[in-house]
Image 1 (tube, rainbow, N blue to C red):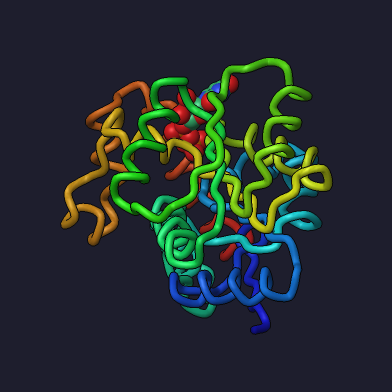
Image 2 (cartoon, helix red, strand yellow):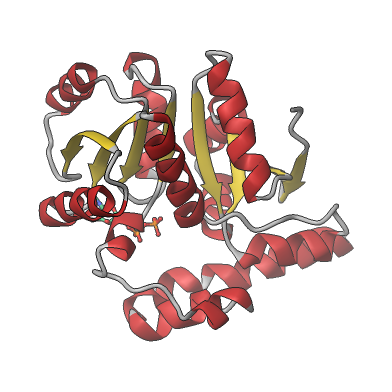
Length: 243
Ligand code: UDP
């Protein structure tokens, strides 16, 4: 399957829906092509405009860039791009865990607070009895060599990294060649969501694209970060009309 790329403020996003994303990853991995997934969102795209390292990772290292969040869908409409499907990072994480359970693949979870990543492992194990979780590691250990050795010894097929952005993308890019995995994916606050540390919005709000509003109301401290969304859309409008 050939991926189609669109560009939003010059940054790449792949045109896939959830099903296509999963089958693309499965197909590539079956051919022995190691995968690095980035969940693109307005905030990451804005950051990458000023962060060359992050920008280079998007261009040269990531193998699949999903459109995580309604902001990119709206941007696509404003720019008159072919329709962008929203594929959330949390959603793709769940699909890949399900696939791992069915295929007997080994999973390693890295990131978040110690009790959060531990509990994430327990919840997933309960939900998917056949899932092989071969290791967990909190995101606050400073000794990187220790972590890399731990992952190398555990030999996971799928590695999920929840360090927040752009830390997780930079971490994966830096160690990619040393990681004995088929898939590495940055999953941001997913472990917090899964363990109920941070709740997801009600389904209706998710469906109509208002999850960001729910998160804002729940965690007002995110307001500073969320100002990025209108800023992003304003830049998209400026790009569209050239002013
Ligand atoms: N985190 C971590 N190590 C750090 C900083 C953050 O493991 O040094 C974790 C943090 O505990 C949280 C996640 O990274 O679970 C960041 O979540 P956030 O919702 O901020 O992710 P983003 O919105 O950037 O995807």
